[in-house]
Amino acid sequence: VRNDVAVFLSEDETRAQVAAMGACLLSEANDLKRPLEIVASELNIELEKLQQLCSGELDVGDALAIARRMSEVYPVPLGDLWMDMDDTTYGVRSCSLEASRLTSRVLTRLDRNLQQSSYYEYRDAAMTRCAPFRPEWIKQLRVVSDSRPDNPDVAMNNGHFMMQTTLFVGPVNFYYRDRQGRLVCEEMNTGDSNFITPFVPHSFTSRDESQEAYIVAVTFGGSVRKALTEFARVGAEQVATLTGSSVDLSSRRRCLLQRRVAAEALSAEQLSAASGISSDRVAALLEGAAPADVELQALAVALHVRTQDLLCTPVQDDEEVVVTRTSQTEAFARRWRTYVFVPLARTVHQPDLKTFDVRVLQSACPGEPISVGLHSFVYNFGARGVELRWTKSGVERSTELQPGDSAYIAPLVEHSFSVLGTALVPEPGTTSVVSDGFHKVEHAGAARLFVVRVPGSLTGETLGEFSTFSETGRMRVGRETMRWYN
Image 1 (tube, rainbow, N blue to C red):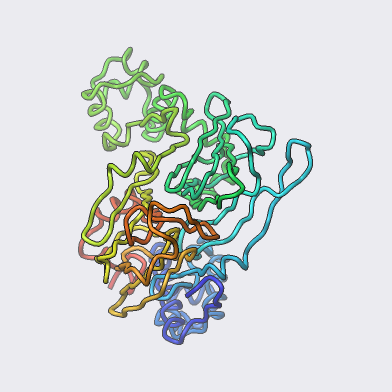
Image 2 (image 1 turned 45 degrees about the vertical axis):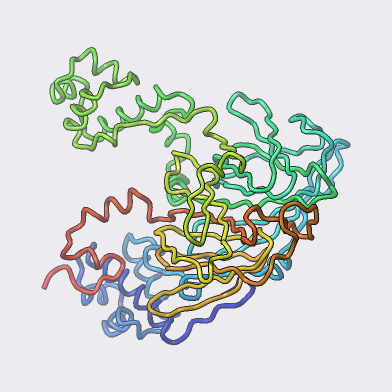
């Protein structure tokens, strides 16, 4: 399915979606300790309707009406009952260059003369309601003659809520404001990348109007994005009292330990007695002192948590914004038989974010199978097309990704890439560059893909929790089929 193609569910797909909603409803009914007979009575809905919902035999509109009614009667969010339509084809959705161009819009910013003039051209890339990212192709329309951070033609933004990882193509200047409030300018080139923490002001310009200069910016949400409604209810100011400051590790340790102690309803004296740590030392720890390993273990036992639940990882000055150069990351390339995975921007604070410059080699006919438990975004920024093949539920599919095309691949969908045809531009050593930013590749005959992997809701913490569930019933998660008692 491509971004510009309307999605209509087949009869089987409709039945599967409704049945999935029925499984969610049955799971919620179990949590509310109500058999379906009681749910039907309290919702004033025929029991047969609920049974049809659980078996997938109900119309989608009727299923939504039942979900709304259940959310009205019980303290159950509608979002926990409604399942959005899967707008992929067996786990893949693609966007052609032509479809991307149709989404083009030009935004203006103030220039040195305080006049509004063109700054960026935005185009959508492959995205789906099933994934947590919003990728964009962005062309820099403002050209600068120097790399001064305070160039008056540079218009900084205010930062944004979502995290961002970026691929650079061509001579692009990247500007950002660091922790000390200083403006920084980094001269970026093809294959360079970055990671930007939420709300860090930044901007991009071109250094050379004779060359194509653009970025592929993949913004995505993490755990905070999923908790947005709770932040809205509680207030970010209140939540901040539970976390401390990212620039002050002592305050983060203080808030973390005090939060754990308050949850256990322990006083400082009781914590001292339970942990065997002196009162004076407990007082220091509660004010943010760094615990020794033996103290950490004692506190974990007293608070009934894991030792890792009491650890804080400092955010270093160079971790709020991470900049990587392709000349440096090449040395860490993972070489497969048919691919070369060159790692791009990384941050330990988002351990499941994995970005790569993937070279699909001439030997990829077909390429080796790939399967990861992360949502994947793929953008072809190379000189030649590739064939994307994938298999799900025993069904094999394929589509072409020509230069400028992009795709989304769902978690655990086995896929591979194969090279197509000949390169659209000369091999290295020439200076020819065609329009839309398709440039020479460093590996002769290779295609080049920008790949971004993010976890969505299946984070390491989620998977760790799921792994503790009883082996006898954990396959019912998301697919509840029975009442909680016989």
